[in-house]
Length: 451
Ligand code: DC
Image 1 (cartoon, rainbow, N blue to C red):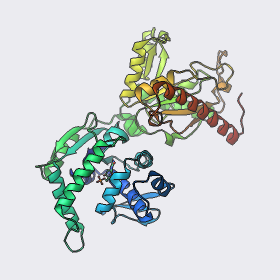
Image 2 (cartoon, rainbow, N blue to C red; image 1 turned 30 degrees about the horizontal axis):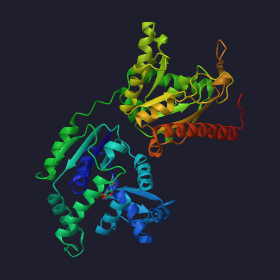
Image 3 (cartoon, rainbow, N blue to C red; image 1 turned 90 degrees about the vertical axis):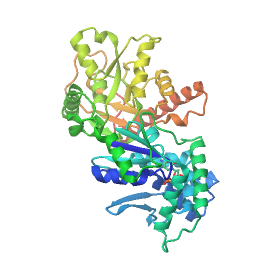
Image 4 (spheres, rainbow, N blue to C red; image 1 turned 120 degrees about the horizontal axis):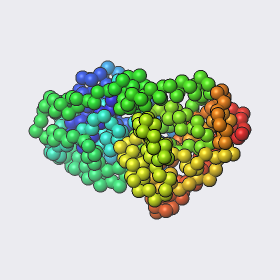
């Protein structure tokens, strides 16, 4: 269960996030603290925050470690505990400035998506529900008038100071907040927005307790985690019984008969994405369906849906009927719907099974879908199904060895600055290169050859 709480700084999100996390026994992710930790590093290294190259140099290879202690999280940057320094006004200003740099956002995004949690996570920040965890179970958005937020921040500074006096005036705090709001809202890269589907709470005239009650009411009736959510984990909490059953069964079969080995699962982050994999055998779709650590949708040719019981099963297994006709708008819409709901889509970009078992040229469909849905593409390479059941054979061998390797995602954001056509061409080229690299690495590591 992931709960996102977004809002401007000083809207109270940090305090209520801590209370909510405590109440539900969840971990809390304070994303602002991660940006602040990076900002502190920049300050102590003496880099100019206005100089992106200098900032990038300082942050290259930076190591952040978060220690969740009962008294609160401790932030350790390159071995140094910076928790007590990251709330200063200087750090605030630098954090706000450098948070606009795409490489800083990418660095912190990675830290956020890999943030460890057990039962659940309360993720607090400005883009938690919109960018970092778009598939979150509950999304909340807190707002408050700037004067009220300045009052709270000023109070906080007094409480944190050694002698009970703030080193800055109230007006300075207020101006700082107004200035940061403007920068956070206006910045091109990931501005502060209310995430789609988020419940908004204006905290201006509410006490912390009142905000918490409203939030608990908003979270109160979380969708009941279904059976498979307990067995297979959070990412499977929404799946139907048949899907879960087939997932477990297929996974077992591939493990037992084909001694499946899966690599790079950690590259698949929650949320929408296109898993683009090479295709050599009828064994590929079930192998992929049971290897992806997330519920996944895939296209299936529509004549398979002619026989009603089979159509029922295919639908339960998240198959989307496509007509094979390139101008089939209804199939395209169904496919885009899947991505717009933050789900994963499995695609065989070569279009059909390769009769010779080797990688083939890629069709344009994958790039078109990625651009229309603004989705990241995961290059994925599978091996061994061709040896077990190549095209043309009537029956598979019931033993063998299969591998699946998930590569690092090709992020759509990295192509957005190009024209639509250039972006698609470049994405397709990069995908072909990535697949080839995954293949070569696997061959080298496992000492195997194409067929
Ligand atoms: O919430 P905070 O004041 O601790 O955040 C410090 C800065 O980090 C803020 O000015 C903007 C940036 N930030 C961000 O860009 N995205 C987030 N999710 C959290 C913080």
